[in-house]
Image 1: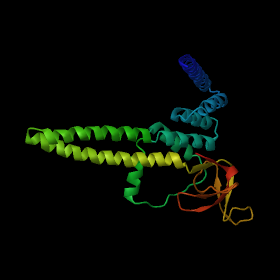
Image 2: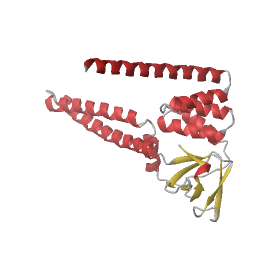
Image 3: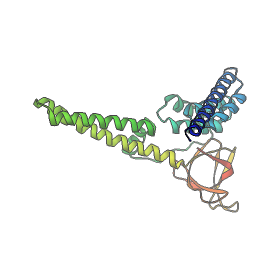
Image 4: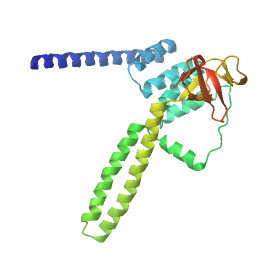
Length: 252
């Protein structure tokens, strides 16, 4: 029995090692193709890598490839995916904004309260895993300073320990809330990008429905209802909503 388990573990580790080597080889080949400005080949290789697991850097590289090939819709799609995985990355955000500036549609978001904007910006500083590490660190420090408050021999030490423990407790709560928000975004993933040159948004999920407005490639939409086979109900940042054919959009 022990020999069987040992053999199984050996084979598993060998497979994982070969898989890692293959990924490294693909990454090296993709980077070389990109350096030689063979963006089509690089995109194909990065896409193969992306199918093995999500990575912000691979998504970012794919966005760069499609941007250099002037495929703005796919560039935005992959930049959005990279931003979802690493929301605080300034390079990703800059390139995403640059790609968006080349789209046709100019959608002005609805007015939001300052608190809502501030909360969204704060949650986008880090991804869910980073917020979790932040919360754990803050909580451990909170316990340490609370212990200083309980067992401190001098008054200044007890006051400092109490004050800092309260602050760190609040930071722990904030970190958990922000981490939950980021994890919820990753789980729901209700964003999508228009991939066709133009897409007519209908009043009903049918080609016979009334035309409401037209969207163009690269425009971001939020999916409200994805229950139908061929149609999705979407909403825009300015509040407009309607039905669009699923073949014309791709989820982030």
